[in-house]
Length: 402
Image (tube, one colour):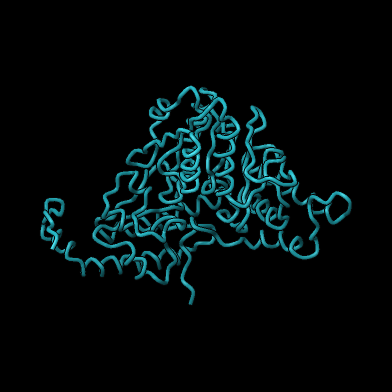
């Protein structure tokens, strides 16, 4: 029997409606969308145009501002390196946060080796940035601010609207990695004053291997392309656009737009059910990240006195994770949890529960029941738990090394 799937921040199942829209382009309509001399090319090009409109409609953009990429990692690389390098003769400073996705932080690191300066803003205990600190971080040569909309590990939602206003007032471009937000919460690039936005297909029930970047036309944002070639995608991303994948991304965006309100309401109820049930049965559970400003489908809980990895192993019939899939191979505690000031031991005991479009109430109840059962069992085996029950303050103990 396959485990239940509760890791929708890592990836999502392909929505059957999305698969249906892709099938013709995987089989009979196989033309190169950039072939201008025959019907095979034209039908693929028409399909790309439609997909571009579907993506643009979801975020309130113009379809000419959407560029297809291989996913949000590429989009983030394009936005950060592209803008920084294009304006480098006058501007050499970038602002981001300490809790961004790895690909944003690594793009910034790589720019530092090219002579750019980067400010990594800390976040408050609730995971949100301090807008006053952002205000104070601007320098005369700041070219870009990059802040993710919804965090992939703890689900907190940054004040994108306010950040957009601040950036526009400083005449600095604003990029947001919206991979975890798009199609789940309403996003409008004009209302939020976003200049660049990264989008991923497989986080919104679309295919893997495709994403998009929104690049504003007015006021125009210029980027230096990462990839050279035939000049496709307005010269910003050469290479044949994979029609079936782009069609899938477009369909996923359209479905998400239609279902957003329904999904959000349902996911909120299931999330509330999961958190309430676990917290009422198990003491010493901490929810990481702000309780109010968050996307409800991403729940990160720390179970004190339990090793997260051993809880994951015990819950082998539920697919869960202890953080981001990109960095879960390392035994270091999550850098996101470290940034919000979580104690090392609590950071090691965190589990991320993902609730999505296809999660059922039965799955939530089963996960809760198993989780409670195993936390209690593991705590009974833990000498630390025993000491705490005896009223010993673990922080006051001087542990000696033998």
